Image (cartoon, rainbow, N blue to C red):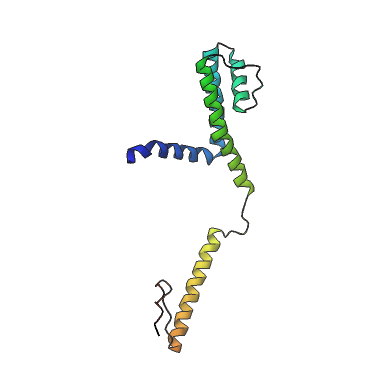
Length: 151
């Protein structure tokens, strides 16, 4: 079972690596355009400029129709390019920008969280000291609550 999950795990890590940096996402997009444009140039015997134009138009899902593949390998590559763009690259770009726009200003920073924890420890210590002076037992907050007594 572990062997079966290896490929999906690597694919997931690759997607996370891509999504975490706009620079890597832009490099991957550019590389995808150049590779598909070069393959289109090879499959369809078009000029390199026209092939890159085709790759950009196809990847952006505009599809003007001025250049379209006629060979089977080029059509397969076009389907793969469109699928990768629509299912992976465009959603990753959208998610990255959305995560930058949606910022929780009410969230505590790490330093604030640590300060709150230290203050809570100090209050707990003072409460225990006060309870000891008064002769009151303080239940341990980590222990599970006691079962109700049957009357």
